Image (cartoon, rainbow, N blue to C red; front, side):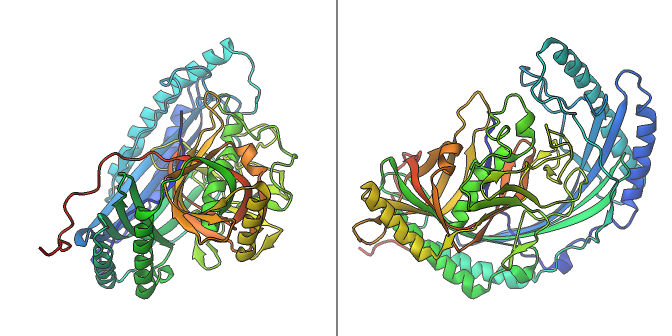
Length: 567
């Protein structure tokens, strides 16, 4: 059973860029060599009469990562990595039926991808580049032939599929060349900032583990395919993360963090902002350690903006990814609901990977071309509560025969349709303070002593396959109990949000006017990809929480160094 979840992926950084190696992809015509080798392979492999090659694609992903930081008050050694990875996509048969077709009721080996992580030469050596392309093409072609034989046999002995659309769609050839340059960063300055913040995070005695990390990843993708596309496009990801963790008396591990994402160093916060946020998360951790452990509960709740973004990403976004509408083992929650109302009539949802920023915040889900070489597009998925579209790759689904630029993957994985920048918009909004008053009024109407406010969520997972329940679990990090009788709000701990999607959507009452961004990294069938979700805070009439799994170890017996009590 596949589990998908959003998580903040942490890296570190602080070297001056002058000390880093420059990208050498321009030292040779990498795209030219790739295209030359692709044409040679295509001409030879297309001659096979039983399983002819009809599509071939090469992608070389160049990743430069620079990382350093502080952990538990100690400086980590700065690290630099420079790697290239190769993906070869081979399709044999025809667009109507090819080797990628689902083998129904097959075992895990039948549907196990032949994909593998392939390191590609980083040096500018044309013979080495051509040899790597040739070797992986040969391997993937043989794997494709073998699987195509199984696909044909499987179709002959199984009933007709519900979705009989083709396995692949045509696309226009794209020509695009984006200059690739490494991010310029003042590493010495940031190393000092991280040191100061790391020491502040490690200072309190109740903090067992702490970290202050900064990472820069510059990623360049070169793609050529048999359609004639020739594309080079880049992304730059900077992530800064502060984290503290501790243990409650009952053994529950607790953490608070603050994270910041940017495409350029100018998008990072000031040192003053970071120090203030460091003190905030320390204070929140202390409150969580002292907070009461709550019992399972059903009642009204507010999901704050960023938490709401994660909520929609998990329980809605994955269910409108195109391949889930076609796969016979998927629950297909929304497959037959196009044109029907699935959300309140004041809610619209679209996914727009062409959006680089939102209200000045850089979005991790931004890209110009997807991993099949299709230009990124804005897709309106829900319009005023009515389902209009799905996110699609070049694998067609019924009534949606073409890609809308959402074929994505991590290197070494197969492409499937994935989210980019999921945007939730509301036509009805109120200020957040009014939304909070509405929460209290809803509690009183329902006779509930309190409602919940989910201030921060780390991620979660959703189950979409038929053999399991069509359910989700979202993992809150900071939750407040808001009392209907006017008592002060109270931090609580030990809860996870659970439920089923159709029921949960029907409970949305109102939204605030405080849209904000959640940046993260999402894991699913095609690996880990950067994503963003934008949403306002939402009020729901009912949400269910259950007890969170917790550890059984007691808190540390000895106090941390420097916090011993005087005799």
